[in-house]
Length: 441
Image (cartoon, rainbow, N blue to C red; front, side):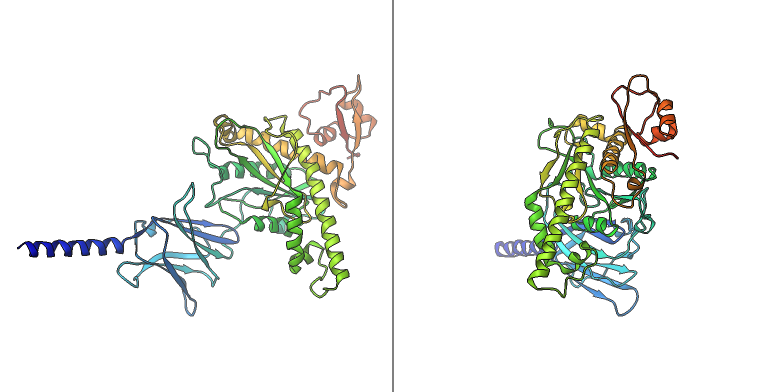
């Protein structure tokens, strides 16, 4: 009898061990992040995923099949929101073993998927990520698309940091940086597009993620005159607060120049279409390096000047953590020919500043301050052939007894034109105030 009981207990242990092994992992949740140029699907896992995948493209519907080894499933796929033009349906299918789970993507076109595991971090646990390249959504938002951008206007590429599966920093009350900076970026785009001399290209128009270099390339492809990456800062303690503006460090610039000289296709783009692939002699290489060095030096110097203007304007509406532009080794600032900067709008980790950043009024004030800094820079340094270059304003220092009507008459322009040029909201002038006087309308 005793041996019989021991045998039964051993059998129970074996069965239990097999059950545990069969369910050593679980698909906890599925998140779908469509972007204009790709779709990212994230499977939240209970443990590190073991997986394999294959595609079936010989008949319709096109399919991507992923097998999760020793994995169960908690999520109901019929309740997963899929708003991607690439994915027709997300479903399960007969697994290859009782202990595995098979997920099938029914696709609208053939794609080259990237499937990889991501380790747990402070925000998420273990994950399996599926990246599907291809048009997934239509661009939305207040900013112009690449095809809508007009010639001879100063083009500002606005990059709302983070997005999609990357929330950025998270405030004490749970505010996601990605959401705040998108609102500020959209407000900035609206203000810029209302200016007859400027136009905005919003790099990220909705809640999805773009790689850092993809953001830079998008700005280069629309021939942007300036690249602004909008962020919110954070620290391990709640005390720090205030904005700052960051530009590329010399060390990172030198490293990027080396990479660019090795990338012949991109080097040709930066040099304005010059064919460098067939020229490998020393003189051609030296010329390419010289041209790129000059281009990057100009972009970095211009970025620093513009950053100074933006800081001056931001100080009027918010506390600044740093009152001069800061240098950093940031991948998103590595364009070889576009003045670029990263604007930290405040510390989302500070409870007071988190609430400010959530305020529509403060978001609008920050957006307008950034816009005014950008406009001040291009008024001083107008690109050739743009509205700023062909409509350069005279500068006038207000003296005692002068009014807008007096100045309008003296310079053969209008009161409204002077107010619009200088973003004035009233007719009151101060002695010593510097005004830009536009040409006659």
